[in-house]
Length: 232
Image (cartoon, rainbow, N blue to C red):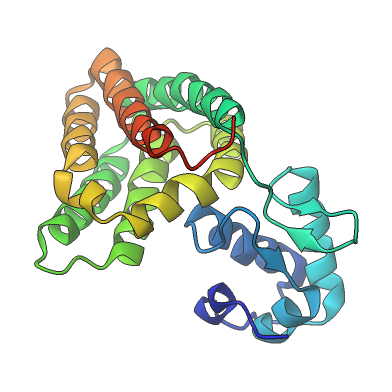
């Protein structure tokens, strides 16, 4: 069996970390859109690439199945679930409410170090979008880094855990679309919304921070739904 290209993008693991690191690495493939809906995952190939035995991979995959980020098909293969437009809309609404609220809290609770992290991520993605030939995988990574820098600034492990669970499900759709359609980056909507969020958090404006994150999520979702690639 040929190795999926996505597995070539991860590094072998330190054997001392095993299950947790395997879960983190496989989660990152889903967060960043490097595995698409319908893609299958071979436990053996993943174990070989990450440099561990099959057991930590099996443990990580079991957690991801419980998270509904992966699914077991009738023939027992593991794959990224396909998503309907209805499911995507539902996840989008949940993200708007939860991630928007986390951004509002961040505007109130952020530290100076948090603000530095948010500003650094915002600047990195903005610079990538202005490049003559943007590196889309890097832009996707900067987008994720920006969002989670905002959510971490809320200083609520519970919120971050919930948001990570949402991104595990929706990441293969939203980030794969960005990687496949570079005009989304060139259009600059995400860059504009990120700048608004940064300014709002810097100024302690909870309503504006929530509005900026909500608009960012809604704008990307509307583009994806308009392409018609999701079944109803």
